[in-house]
Image 1 (tube, rainbow, N blue to C red):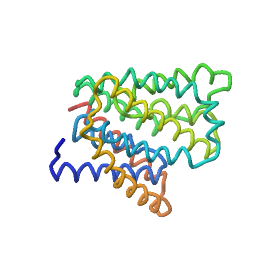
Image 2: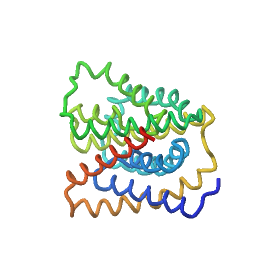
Image 3: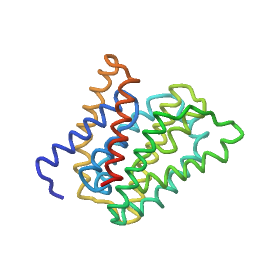
Length: 245
């Protein structure tokens, strides 16, 4: 699929911004990429473009700590739900209903931004985790398949499990990596995989990694809390614009 120079420049800039946010906050590359690209191109095209850079950056995050086996044993019911829900929900993205998919994407971005800005932290008890994990995974997967965004309700749920900081980062990497693979599978199953975007998706690794490098350098010079609030306000504005379009 051919793109103009301006489109390629905007796509590259979107991945630099998404990588920068991930470098500063440790997460957010698929969310920001879908938010920015979804305002420029169809959500299906945006999802096809983010698959490779999302997989590479999240696999790096997943393998960066030593607790992978223990986390997988604990979280596999959630990951199974993510896989099943994403494959089923990808019918929305692949179905060509651009308006519906864009509004769904806008709603998820707005809800995530407002929740993260305003909601108070909560804890999930050990008794509730065995039945709640697959349910959260299924809901997350369904939203992922329909919008290309991996964060709701997976991120708040994982943050509620009382994991140590490094384990939480790795658990988020596990969830995001599973979501990326499941989204690629779901788009393929429903005939939505746009093979013409594969080369461009591979090339998008470069601006995404450049943004991550820049974000990691900026992390020590700016307040991550202030940056995070500004990032969430921008996401809320993007989501509102998509809903009202």
